[in-house]
Length: 243
Image (cartoon, rainbow, N blue to C red):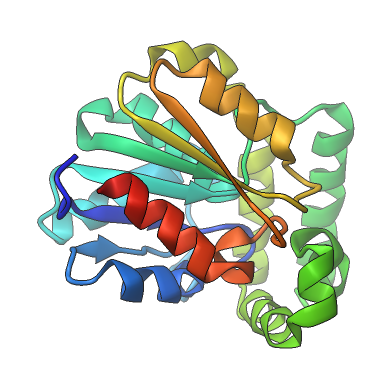
């Protein structure tokens, strides 16, 4: 793989592109784009679909003069990466799918997203960090990295209520990408935090084994937000794979 091919970093819910700061720094001098999805990072909310998120990222690539890139998606960003590939496979040189899953929500998961979307529209986002952080971060981070906990709490606090609600609806309605895995003809790196309970190792393994050219990396001491919890290990895995 071309060592200087551009990289597009797709962020997790309910954070924004700023979550990738350590990766943007580590990937220099490569051209790196870390866009905000609609409804996040000050970008106005748009259509409540992951296809709309993927089209926004494609538009940002066009504006930045990026034709083809390695697409890196974490959690919701991974869900969006699948849609990105489905919409514009010719723009994808390779994929990194971190702390995510190919499958769709089950009925319980869909119902939870409906409840959360309704609550955030009623009450705003003040309650969101306390509700989400216990599952977003691993045990090691809670025990040893209070700065990361506060960093994530601050990113969640920046979220727009309507943007959060529409993202929840987009994730609720996303299709099952499992049948698409065999048709992904570019190299895929599946990355997962060893302590990720939301999209655990079994989900990453399904991705790595389901694509024709897949590799799996497990990051010790990290939970669902592996790039923030173990940035050095995440960056090493990403940069080593790109080389």
